[in-house]
Length: 281
Image (cartoon, rainbow, N blue to C red; front, side, top):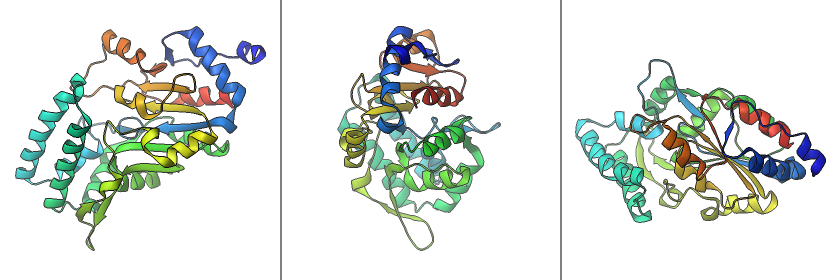
């Protein structure tokens, strides 16, 4: 372990809360290597980034919202204002989250949103974050499972992955029901993932992977993403600090990040993670 520890160099552009603690954790990961590692990613604003000229919000949900008629958008906005305030303040309960996600999904069903049009808009405006393709290829070459755990829509994630050649081992996200014209006719309630149940512990498929591969690299953009994997010493948590219009990138936000994450990236690129994984494997 000492020999491994002496060879560790924290990648440039990876800002860590405590370099000594991070190096110790990294040494534990390196001692286990690829055979004991898996990676968990959020999707929107973690693997995706808006294309130049696009509006600030290019998440799955905001693109879907744009395809609602005017009346539906008014209903959507009322729900957003009610529950987003709870999310930002940290006061949102599990029941609140289920009600928020379910109410919006029901709007998409009520107005029979054309998913083909949604996917076209999404691909036109949401690009791939720099370094993502290379990172996923490194995981694939090393036999390390990659999981996308998202509170978005599985069908949209799938088409984005095909567009950019990203091949995750597993995608966990809310699944829709579509009619013969590819319009949303329902959603599968047993697949519902929202911001507060994005956790390995609530998904048997992830628990099984964790049992075989105890070390987890977790990557997300929001503070809540830190809970996608449980534990402290066996999880390296990295936050992509890419604030939304109603968020800030202040020193206070950095302090809040380090209460839950081991490191953060401000550059907008996942390339520092490629270097980190190379050290581990």
